Picture 1 (cartoon, rainbow over the protein chains, first blue to last red):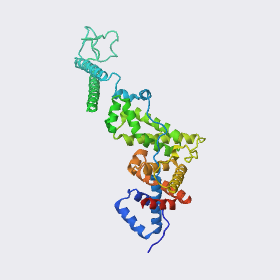
Picture 2 (cartoon, rainbow over the protein chains, first blue to last red):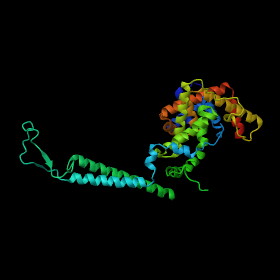
Picture 3 (cartoon, rainbow over the protein chains, first blue to last red):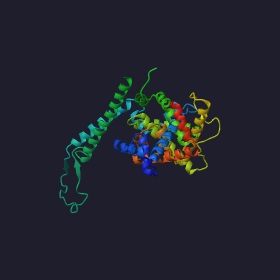
Length: 184
Length: 201
């Protein structure tokens, strides 16, 4: 026997999802079964299907003008990311980057590996208590004039240099491989 | 002439070929424009917004991950949303989708070979739908356009709009129910049914 019930929002949502094929197979089967006996569900489904059909018959409109963009305008629109992937000097930029970061890494590495020993001038106060010694008497000098020798800062610099080296090398490699892909 | 895939064209653009970007524009301008014109209801504004969206896409192209088309359409939808938001702040701008001027591109209908009566009915139906689209809230309109005109799945709509699938379902249902009511009130639905039956035979 066919019945007619008032439809709930959930019913309508399910009908809409059924129409789009977005209902799970179990729910779809249950709903189809209900539709066989419920006239209101059938009518609502038909009307929804017709509404969707009407929407789909809306014509595809042609733009009133071509939306092509002037290359100059495109060039101006480039954001900062463009500089990263497409540097102004082409391969020159990443190559220079690799060279500079290599120098940076070697320099700081060399400094970091310098011995950090110091010599104390004859007659200077060697007591650890700085309060006891007059400040003018204690003169510390280093064996070489290499600032930061053996210090953690030099090691940090060397590690940072290695990081920058890796980054720029990867950047350079990406540009090369992208160019290879494009040529193919 | 060599036909490139979207992804190949994107690579060419990233290598500095701006002409390749215009190839992408030509390929996707119709879809982008149609989304804008249905969302905004103004043919001229739609063209400007679509073009601005293309420029924005170019600017952010290096951050593209995945496919170009859904990414582009997300940018276009965002641009339309921004325009609608700014129009709300300045309510003097009309949101009417239905315009009576004869030269409105939104009302230009391609000749489908139907008889004059069917063509007239189709035109009336499309006018009503265009008007009805303007009468439903922006968020519902966006979802129904993406689903029924652009043909996207619920998941794609959710990804594009940043809402969950449950919300997509409920917005779509509300939009369809509203459209259905308007078409029934305009006595267009039975005629749609008849037209569908006629066109099926």
